[in-house]
Image (cartoon, rainbow, N blue to C red; front, side, top):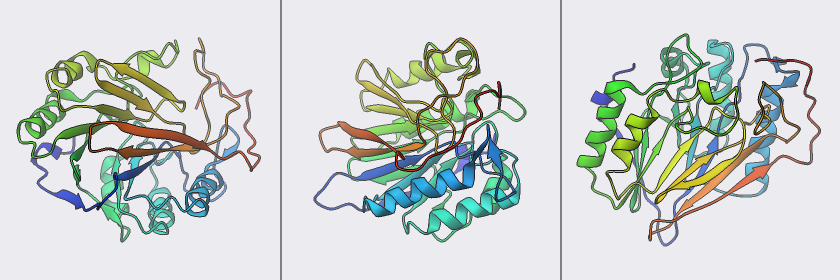
Length: 279
């Protein structure tokens, strides 16, 4: 783990007379090489299309959340590219590692003008809490005692009305037989913390390369399409989906609701090799 339990830095983003707006960009799987491909898809090209769409739609978010698997090969060049292109949005960017990432290389290379290492972000009545669920050398995830303690302390010391934890791995089964064993190993322990806190209104993750939107009590559980290749929902074995790359927009209201939608990049043709049975 990264020692985030001792991380003191918080990012304060002031938003006046409207709900804070967040865009989640997840799982771009970038490579050292410019034309690097995941399942036949050029991941830099698909990420660029996502960012162009955000700019063209004039979404003007207050925060970008990059929720892991930024790189496929852990190369400095892949992270430096991500840092450079995300800076073009001129929006604060906060990040967490995924199972394909090297968190130490991320910390060295994600140094753009708009990047922050903060793991708690205050926006109006909300605080975003970033959690590291990645385990070196493993595809599945685990928060572990350090990260769960970090979350518990954030809850106990909260000075806002609502809390919104974010991680990479899915903490619940999604009825996708090959993906479910690759989720969060200590999901039950996570929900023991979350369900004991009435301030938790949402839980957001990446990793599964598909849309997920369900409630567990008052907690809205959300996952988002990758900016690269998609995985087919409800599949027994590994299968890429035909859906386009995408991203999620979230608005956090003063009464504790999460207004959200997913945007897909439908106007560009992306080529995926569906014969490949792993990634």
